[in-house]
Image (tube, rainbow over the protein chains, first blue to last red):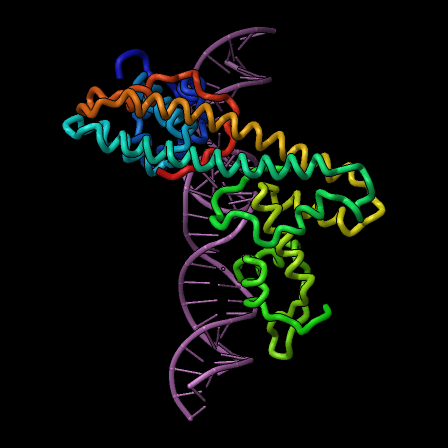
Length: 149
Length: 149
DNA sequence: CTACAGTCTACAGCGACTGTAGAGACAAGA
DNA sequence: TCTTGTCTCTACAGTCGCTGTAGACTGTAG
């Protein structure tokens, strides 16, 4: 709360989190309710920028909002020990490792598809054939698969 | 349409796509409206299984539903040439490559975090410090980051 | 005949935002 | 002072790709 209070737009720039996203974080209890100016505008101190940066970084690292809530709760109870946080990071690490492995498999298959393409007509397109053929080869866990064409 | 018609449950099992998902694909125009029995149950031929397998495989490879719609459209106009499909696969491949690179960066950072953890109190937890510190280091493109704790 | 599994429609919910509408607030220039 | 333009406000709908629910009907095996 030290230092002059900043509007939401300022901390948005400072932390690299969109204004709407900050309000969203407030609405789901990640950010706590800030002071308001007389006219009702949110006013934040530098600690809000820290917190937002923390959240953003954790999100960039793939932590879910729920997980981040837990991390923040742990953070604010300093008598707890580090083990829970370490465990979370390890889970996250394992998760990332899995995702990398899955993506590498996809990469290999896509490379095969692209290599086998010889620019013929669609009727003989190896890419489409490759997509159609594999009835059973794909992984069975239907995890996140969100890539645009 | 050859062969005896199958109910939605059968093609669900055959293609490895959930019943509800099949109906969803129909609702968004990925699957086309099947015949119905007298009592109103959907009846499919073997081609539906093929189509579903194609869709599932493409989804597993990370193609968006929109992209798959395009691929199917291309498939059904065989006079088009393979180039568009090849381009889509290449875009997809580049996309997967990027995602792998990003995940590897995350992996490295998470490894550093976990290595630096010495099981102390939260107040001195290197993992939390690591999460808090990096104000600017994270990537600027806010792509998908969906991993649970 | 009786269970019970399968199917139907319609709609709400998920996560993590993003976009919209319509209104009010504030800072800088003419 | 007025104006212009950028911020900010609330509240809610939309995004994507499904998943789950409710309540009714249908089909099949014992």
